[in-house]
Length: 228
Ligand SMILES: NC(=O)c1ccc[n+]([C@@H]2O[C@H](COP(=O)([O-])OP(=O)(O)OC[C@H]3O[C@@H](n4cnc5c(N)ncnc54)[C@H](OP(=O)(O)O)[C@@H]3O)[C@@H](O)[C@H]2O)c1
Image 1 (cartoon, rainbow, N blue to C red):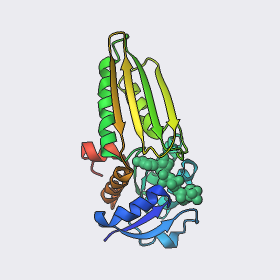
Image 2: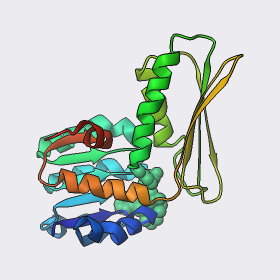
Image 3: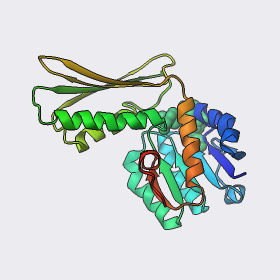
């Protein structure tokens, strides 16, 4: 069975530990704030990282330097994406990242892009992007909402998009994109029921990246059949 390292032993790390055997992994290493040491990673096939935004770049640089492949689920670090990709490429390792490892949300990215493409040339429609998450979530807007807005921009929607966030209670994550005109409203909404779909997606990505090189987004894997 391939050996999995869990880096970041919080809510997501614990759920990944629980589900890992279903995906054929042995959890051989767990690290929270302890230093990452090459010797501990010698027998690791892949590491899954759910920590905090500021931890991602140093964690990726260190783990890639050990020659170990990585799945990054942490959000709020994409300003560092180019540096992170460089370290993975320089070390000849593999990386899968996503602001959201739910298959449903990745389908939602495509649906939102299609709607934005259709309405880009219809100036009577204004747009909003909104999300709500549990009170402990550190970044706002969520990485998923930023990705949805990026998808809309890439699809050609150039007018203003009003972006807002709420943080309250225990909400696992709800994202909504809306278009409004004098005649009607279109609302596209994704509601996560639990964190399990994120953990399952990350473990699916971990299975996929074992033995591969290069940098991939989760959507490359699930919809395009990307091969390294
Ligand atoms: N991509 C997705 O599908 C998805 C889904 C859910 C969550 N997320 C993201 O994943 C991240 C973690 O979420 P969570 O709910 O598991 O948060 P959490 O419960 O706060 O867990 C984060 C854990 O990482 C630890 N940590 C902080 N800095 C670290 C470092 N430098 N090295 C190793 N561990 C470190 C924290 O330790 P301390 O508590 O001691 O600081 C904590 O145990 C967040 O960015 C969240 O937005 C992504």
